[in-house]
Length: 505
Image (cartoon, rainbow, N blue to C red; front, side, top):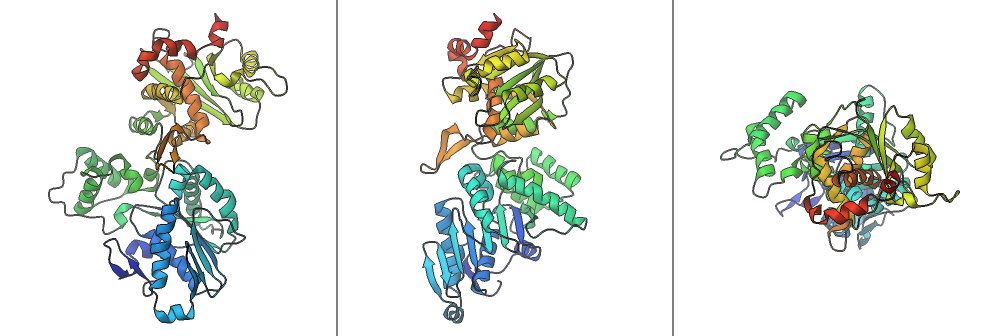
């Protein structure tokens, strides 16, 4: 690899590829299946694709693939990582192993080996597969991520080579789960438990591993919060940076064109940090980061002196999600969360009643008016019968943005029980606006995936809180914020709470 392939480097120069220190470290620790969490601009895509090209060149009958998240990236990777290195090989090699095809994002060689770059692949067998920026695929293109799981991954077999490489994109999704599993497996590997060939070895390369991530500290101002951050890196993680590295980090984060709040995602210092940053396009990204930074995700016990209220998202074709919250002074304490699919309403009501809580009221969404497919009885009636006459129905808002706004307004008052609301926190962190590939921008409507269930239950809480049904004058919690909904207060308040309130009289 270090003596055969020519590439175009980051300075637009034609150079012979030679592994950097981090690329060499990655190469020396390769396994059959590999998951790679990295900092930006580390050159791993080039290295991995050259490994796959090399495999195809010098072995017969190899089928290999590279997955990129957009068609533009497909074309770029094929042109720069495959076609250019092949066409610039020594003539003696190209004469010995000529290309039958080298266009349309596919290289097919006379030795019956081929390499295709695409946004998805289905094949009977793949000897090598590279998924580039899997985190971004999971975040922006959920259907593609599902296709990779169901269509492409089954094409791999024991003994195949798999490279799952990406920067982080939120603390959820398939890439996040792959990293979590691989970190657990490598911990066992260090204890002497050998990896299976279809288990991923975890590789992590922080920004400071790359020697180029340094700069002259002269004139660079390091803010007080960065000084505290660097101190915490040393004390909590044993990471000691030199002046040139600290200056580079400060400029890259806080410079005129700096990454700002995206810095930890793009240039993480340790694995967990990489996933702290919310996914791109996250509906509640800023709110989630603020809750984490303020310490509002913590141990939060049940206060037996206060009633518990539940807020539902009914699983009609989706999981049912239920938030358990208490209202103490100005705080909204979310102490528990339940989510499950494939069970009827009777099961979920039993879960609620089996909890050791004393309840105030239960708030269910507008689709509780739908009738049970078997009994033809409205779901609301069933819930009311099982939970007692403490059920109120929250009517659907005129637009999704109204319920999102209500949730955003209650967010600063929310505290989360760290262990019992882990799934809810994942939902809120990964809940994001759908990506419009044709217009290259986010839509106004969130993605309707697994994260929507918990997020919708949280919006149910927000809609009730914002009109003062819970909070404000009634329970002495402090006046609800009306924000942009202030102009709509009268009609908004009137149409959110309907059937249940009228029944309650």
